[in-house]
Length: 59
Image 1 (cartoon, rainbow, N blue to C red):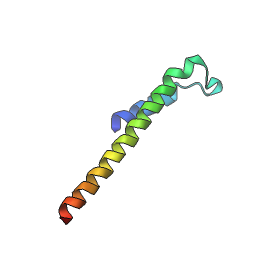
Image 2: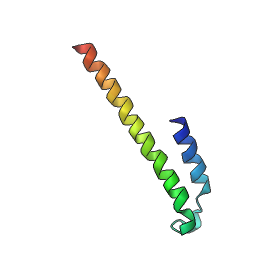
Image 3: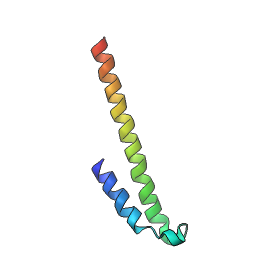
Image 4: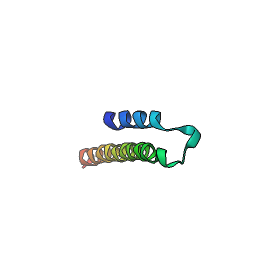
């Protein structure tokens, strides 16, 4: 998750906010979107592992 956060910050700094949807910003915008998706997927995985541990300990 640290690598995804680092990439998120790096690519956010590369975005030109004055010309947000220009062709020059497509790579950094995709570079911001991908780590966000990774972070959400990792959070879902961590929550599902906690739920699984609780269900196993209750059985």
